[in-house]
Length: 166
Image (cartoon, rainbow, N blue to C red):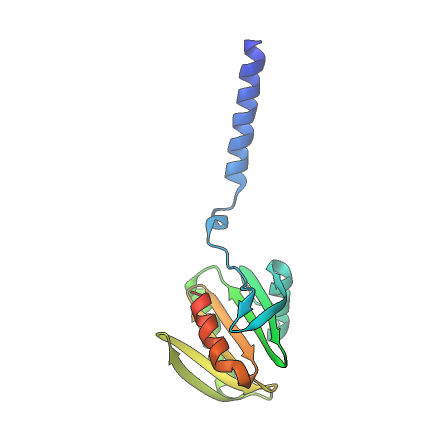
């Protein structure tokens, strides 16, 4: 009886240790939660992980090496907004991506124009006009955030996103 108990305890201990060591170190990082509402706009649909990363890469026309991605579509009446969050392995990779985006879009493209740099909440935020919306993009630690929003609700939605994504 004692041997069976001892064997069972040993097996459970080994299984527990194997489980703990199988958890990736980065899984302990804080997960981003997609807000259900932003400045009166309601979340209509969202995606995370591989699906969101594929959508983000498609927008760039090439695969972007992100660690994780989040995409959310918001609406209220006629007002719409899309929120894209690309999370990189580290802040340096995220900074390189934002610099590349700023450089390419800042020159003007077929799709985007009227590039501006603003300061909101002590952050550098870049904005462009395109596809009937105002597009804001900025760096937040290891994340690159892109917000595409209808002009009628742009300011309150941007302010809300800046408070939510920290």
